[in-house]
Amino acid sequence: MNAGGQEGKETGKEEGCVRFSSSMSSSLREKICIYFLFPRYYGCGLVIPECLENCWILDLGSGSGRDCYALSQLVGEKGHVTGVDMTEGQVEVANKYIDYHMEKYGFRTPNVTFIHGYIEKLGEAGIKNESYDIVISNCVINLVPDKQQVLQEVYRVLKHGGELYFSDVYASLELPEEIRTHKVLWGECLGGALYWKDLAILAREIGFSPPRLVAANFITIQNKELESVVGDCRFVSATFRLFKLSKTGPTKRCKVIYNGGITGHEKELIFDVNFTFKKDETVEVDEETAAILKNSRFTQDFLIRPIEEKLPICGGYTALETKDKITDPFKLAEESDSAKSRSSPDVAGGCCGTKKC
Image 1 (tube, rainbow, N blue to C red):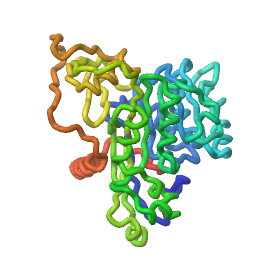
Image 2: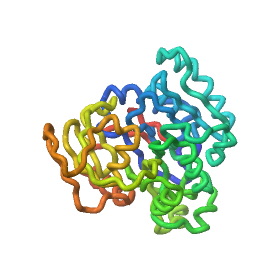
Image 3: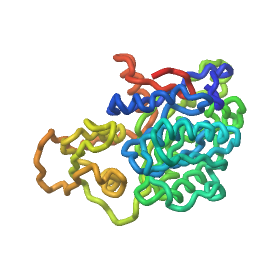
Image 4: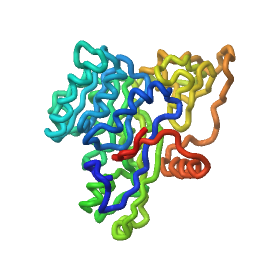
């Protein structure tokens, strides 16, 4: 699909779709599934993090508002969702649906706002410092040349303990000039793809915690001419989460128990590809994960104790594995492809596509 959400006739591109978390309850899926049929949608699946009640969320490149309206239902009437988009026509389309959705959800006061502006210039759009709990972005950052400026702005507007949860396209190597300036590849969200290792570098320089990989799938190009331009470079659609944590000193390894209190994830919380927390099960976590759980919106949903403290074993015990954590989206995509060959996928959301739930 191209940047306008239409079928990629020029590239013959097959999108790697970011899917719903398999831990998401069927009732939560039913709430948001309808948004895959929303008109004039641009993006890669649906970017829905967990633990959203009463949160303030900012959507970068909100387009026609689909993600914003899905999220506005999940944050509830005490939460709020702001969408910012550079295209005035998209903002106008999104605004048309406000009354409809508020009536549908039974909200007395609208909890969603759409703003015309640039995601690398959020200050000019009126977005204040430390005003949001979560920032999401759905296949948009790759279309901005200065990605560091975008991430810097996100860091500025996030509260301490806040999160950037976003899906985007990544490249397996530094893109040469020929790819970065190719009009078709740029329009297909490939020419602006960030080299995946550069994300960790940018995150560290800005002050974010290291990127945590959530999902990844390959994007293939079925066009001989464009394949010759791309050469050995590969592309994935991947979801990462970055946290803005207060610098309060080192956090030690911990034992944690998930209490099952997150709506839609009552039985288990798949936090990323390396950590899954089942209700009432004791899990050892590393220093970085412990710091995130302690200092983010997730703290209320976990019992967190020092590694040496004995805890009652109610639902099993998972020790911290010594093997390296998966951070490479291409490695994860390869594993996903292998799994697909053995079983059919759970529920798929098309990247800029039209697959139904």
